[in-house]
Length: 131
Image 1 (cartoon, rainbow, N blue to C red):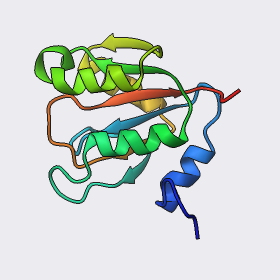
Image 2: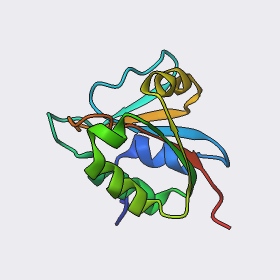
Image 3: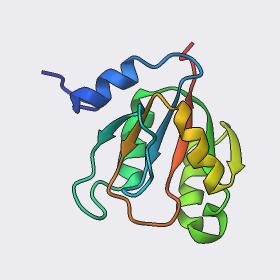
């Protein structure tokens, strides 16, 4: 049995299988996921688990070299934006419209669905290399 880190077998396997430049997303409970994109559904109920809980666990295990957010987060969820910028300080970032974020989600390797119920808590992450 695994002693620490992510114990969800599906998610642990997907993170272990990430290659350099692969895209994946941490999303709220309502983000539409295109057909063919694998979903790791962690959502239990509204607010459980939170975006922050999932992001913290993922960043402990995955190397990230870039991220993309919906520009609407600036006005609609500045507290979460501040948290993201702090957690990913020094990492390349991009802001696009929420519609464009949804369009680009067709390129994702997988989506992690959280129970987050706040505005625009969706982040597309680009895997980096750990060396």
